[in-house]
Amino acid sequence: MNIRLTGSSLTSSEVVRVARQGAIVELGKEAVEQIDVASSFVRQIVQDEAPVYGINTGFGSLCNVHIGSQDLGKLQENLILSHAVGVGHCFNEDEARATILVRANTLASGHSGVRLEVEQLLLELLNKHVYPMIPSQGSLGASGDLAPLASLALVLIGRGTAKVHGEILQGQAILNAIGAKPVVLEAKEGLALINGTAVMTGVAALVFSDARTLLRTANLAAAMTMEALRARLEPFDERIHDLRRHAGQGAVAKDILSYLAGSKLVGTCDDVQDAYSIRCMPQVHGAISDTVDFVENVLLNELNAVTDNPLLFPADGDVLSGGNFHGEPVALAMDYLGIALSELASISERRTNRLLNPALNRGLPAFLTRDAGLSSGLMIAQYTQAALVSENKVLAHPASVDSIPVSADQEDHVSMGTIAARKARSIADNVATVVAIELLAAYQAVDILGGEDKLGLATSKVFAQLRTRVPPINGDRMFIEDINAVQDLIRSNAV
Image (cartoon, rainbow, N blue to C red; front, side, top):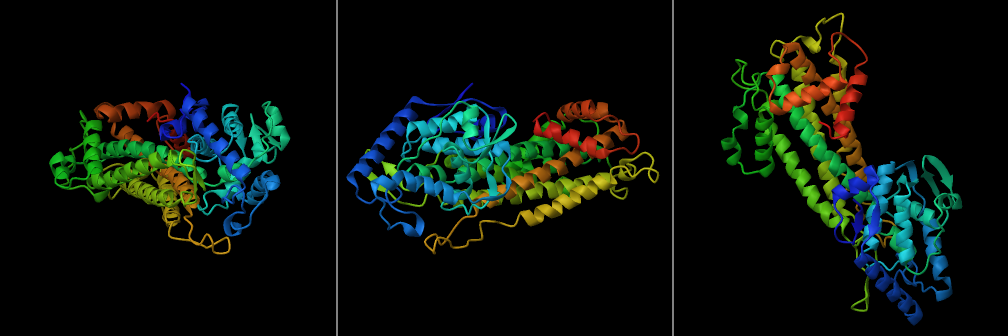
């Protein structure tokens, strides 16, 4: 089913469908009408020749310089060429596609002033699988994602670099490969293409989707760990969680109980209590769940926001200069999500340690190997977890608490939102590995116990899935292959 852009109805799940699954994107009828009205309004302003910021003036601290109508196209082209100064590795293909989609949805609202042909070329890049090479470093998150979006805009004017069906092309060859022509920018269009939060929001939508998957997977991994350790169920009693009232906490406790329904392993140890990494799982995973819900609400607004500047209100005859390009909402949300995901990895590593440590694992062999000494088992896999958890602690330092004034102090507070989104993506990738290792360890522990037939309703299905990818572990081998296999299951949402 195609994704139809209206400027006001895009969802994060649709971003994932387009960015990762190649869904076709089209413009809704109302979007076409909105774009035409706004672009006509810009042409009228140009004809009137009264100075209006972003249409016939310079930019940033040069906002008081009036530009004659004969130079407006050159003004927009110069803007793209001068602003495409991003550096570092390029965003992944899914991140680039998400960026194009978010930018196109913003323009579809009819408050930016681009012509229909500009919008249609953006969608053609998506639908014909053109992957602009967009450097990931250089955005301050206000006035939006200027440098990376300028690299995207280069492709539209027959410049830049892109990958087309796996081949890296440059300049006009990119559009030639898909039978398209470059646009010749007119008034307001260059600024509308690069001024806004499309990069940070596109990346954020993908991180959010991954966070949902990681949380569900971590809940399942933790449930299987509980079975391997024969943990107690009392801490998941709904009466406990009703007394605290946090929605996520109660939901996680309920989910864990449903996953373990029918288990003959849980509750069979003699210990009176479990460690916090087990007993406080609803409180920790639940708080993370609440964080993810908060981020979802921020993204729903931002995906359908108009974030360039100035904004056009054709019905009122107004052009208003404001600050919707400032990425603070996304910056704070991504920093928050990065912190929450770091905690998900931290508690997962502690549970894995309890499975591997013979002083804590309730009779399981050291490092879950049947031949300790000759074999190291999963000992070093937990080292990898510890390294990633430590790295996450560095990455979780908030980007949004920093600001460096630019543009001769005209832009004297910025969000660093794109840095926050990039860091959150790195954290999520690390968490996927950490959770995969816990799941692998729990799988091995249950196998050693001979407990496959004693698992709960959901964990038995997870165990069966793992068995299709991970053969029984009877001695040391290249465990990285097993870890990668489990990660593939997680990323595909199979778990």
